[in-house]
Image 1 (tube, rainbow, N blue to C red):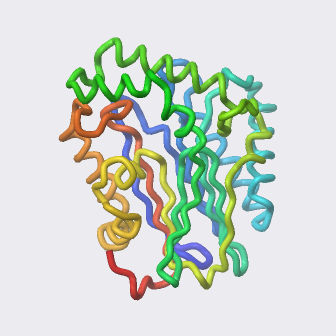
Image 2 (image 1 turned 30 degrees about the horizontal axis):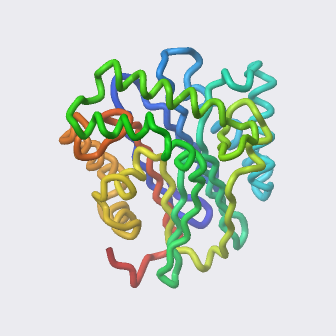
Length: 287
């Protein structure tokens, strides 16, 4: 899609067994990527519904106020959804969110939870906008270590003990969600204040060549699997092959590791969404 000042291509692929809970929304000057937070139950409404509802609301607010403060836009959107749908903190579906918005001579980015934004500049530097509070929260948990140990030993994703460990991790996460707890984290859910804790960044548009925006199912191709050794390699693949082929390549690699021995993770396939925003010809870049 051609926007006012950049060209966006996207790739999306669902994980397994149900429609994707990732979402992409676009306005004339912005791209919004969300990951509906997965649950270990089939409770309704699901994260995909929340991601869809939030993306539509954020897109509407940005269309009405294209230069609005991104944190305030997100806070207003969450507040509106809470009021309209009677959501209750701690029991509501949720979503991560990343926004990249071009207005005038400035590119702005917002990230809440693990949906990173990677900007490449004309000086060949990378600027990573990420929120890794959730990753830090679970990294030291014994359940996380046990999940990885069991997968490396060949127990796979389908055993009851794997599911039980994931439920324990989920319960631990919920105790630290959107309440200002020490070492806690924030995500778009039913607490509008979470938007104030989003990570934000701005750049002059003349200094940016391209930007990657993705859910963690796609970022795993670099950060977890090393299929693309660097963000530059991922951007090069998006530019030459397109994000659709990139997410398919990551998905196929996961299929080859169907029991999680090589890359321990929560499930065989996560939903994958990847947006590639090109602001200027990336001359001088090489993978």
